[in-house]
Image 1 (cartoon, rainbow, N blue to C red):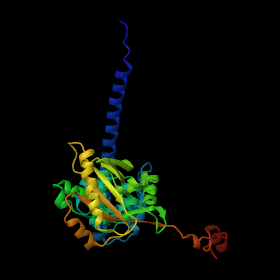
Image 2: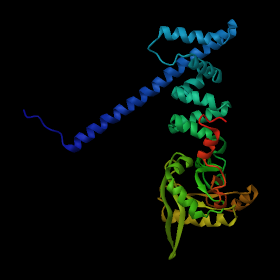
Image 3: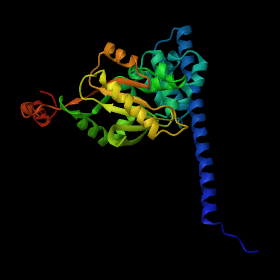
Image 4: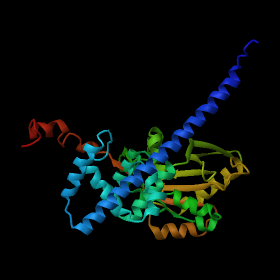
Length: 343
C-alpha cells in the first residue's frame, strides 16, 4: 500500500500542535523546578535559622556548610556560602510556608535574590513578586521596575474612574495608570513643545510601552478623526488588551489647565462613536503634563462624565546651548584623574 504524504497545511497544523504541547510542558517543568528549588532553599534557610537560634551558632557555620555540601554534592550548583546566606535571608523574609508555596517559589531563584537585595518592605516585596509572576518579568525587567519605583507610582494618577466606570473595570483602570510617568529615556529642553515630546515618545516606542505597562497596543500618533466635516488629531492612541478599550493620551508641555478635560471629553466621545466596537469597554483618557495642582485637577474632573486621569511626567533636561562647552567632558575628567581613575 502506497504511503500517503500529508499536505503542507495539515502537516503545519500537526507541527504547530506538537510545538505548543512541548512549549506548555517546558513552562510547566520550569515552574515545577522553580517550586521545588524554592521550597528546598526555604527549607535549608529555615533549618539554619532554627539551629543558630537553638544552638547559639554564629555565621561561621554557613561557611562550613558551604564547604561540606559542595564536597557531598559536587555536581550541584547553588550551595556556596553566599547562596546559603540568601537562603537564610529568604526564610527570614518569608517565615510563613503558604506564602512561599503560593508566590515566592513560583519565581526563579535569582528573582528572589533581587527582591531580597533591593526591597526591604515586606508588602512592597510581595507586590513586586506578584507583578513578576503575573506579567512574566525577566530578572532585568524586575530590577528596572524596582529602580524606577513602580510600586510608589502605580495606580497613583488622579482619576474619575470610580464615577465613570463600573466595577471591577474602574479598579483595573485605576491600577493601570501611574503618577508620575518616567520618560528619562528622553532628553528635552525645558521649553520643548508637545510635538517634540510626542516625536520622542514615538521614536522610543518600545521604552514608552515598557513604561506604560503590560497590555498597551500602539494604534498611532496624530491619529485623525473626522467630526462634522472638520479634522481633529489625537496625540497618541492605544488599545489596552486587558481592559478591552481605547486609551487616548493627550500631551501637554506645561502645567495642567482645567480646560484640558473638556477637550479630552470631546475626544473620548468621538472615539466611542467612531472607533469603539460594541463589545469594547468605554474609552479612557490620560492627560500627561509636566506639573499639576491636585485641587485644580480634582475640581476639573468633578463634572466630567467620561473616564479620564491626569498624571505628571518626568524626563531628562538637555543642557542649554549657552552652557555647552563650559563643562568638562568625560575624557577630560578621566585625563585629570589619571590612568587609574585616582588623583
